[in-house]
Length: 353
Image 1: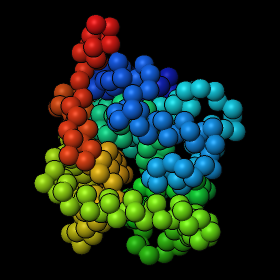
Image 2: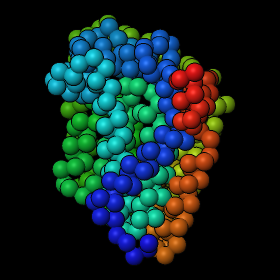
Image 3: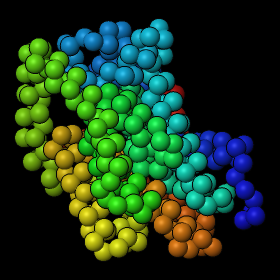
């Protein structure tokens, strides 16, 4: 098997198998997805998202969604009817998982390494949240951060910077970490021409600031939301370690290996930026396990470091790590609620009982 290469057909099979296993072990609440259920994690954001798809620029929605305009605009432009726009987040998670698999194959063209790394990615909250919560376009943001960190084309990072903030502001929060990973992966100076990529975020900032000056109601509701969010974040501090753990679980091993593999100074810098990124996420968002996926670029950096240092052992080790993440229990942590994720057979019983 080690002599096999990962051709496009095998790559599709690996991605499909990884996502299928992820859903088998960490299933969405199917019985809650049949119709709108107010007050549920699975539907609250989806309900707002569907309202935006009908009227992308409406302002009478929850403040967190006011500027996440790109997916609703796409759905509105394509005239997607009914609940059809809810397929966009799933398309994003398939795109992000496929890109992760492509990146893994570039580093080590071994089926075990690619499958193990893809399975590791597919069993983190980067995939579990878009699968389990309807209307969550997170995967497009994680895809954009991976493009910033590992994309080869000169237009890739600028395009991600132009588009992804309009999917979710988390892209801006995660950009410094992804940009740092890119510099470390390429052994480039920390400050040079690539630093100018950050300028591609300026149009988003200018448009948002300009519009906010003329939209007092939206600005006030956003300010109230941020104040409430920061206040609530203090109550979440005891749950932060558990929330971060549930977001990545065994994938934290890859993060730790990526930091260990770096020279001491750069490793300390990367660790500081990682903690700062996660800390800001705690202040601005109460879904702790979901926000941990912002460390995805470091997860893949750890996989690549393992392939670089131990190419002979990396395929077996990566496969073991992916399987371990598959069998470790997972849960969503939102505010002070811990919502365990059940395997598919249990959710099917609940659906058809």
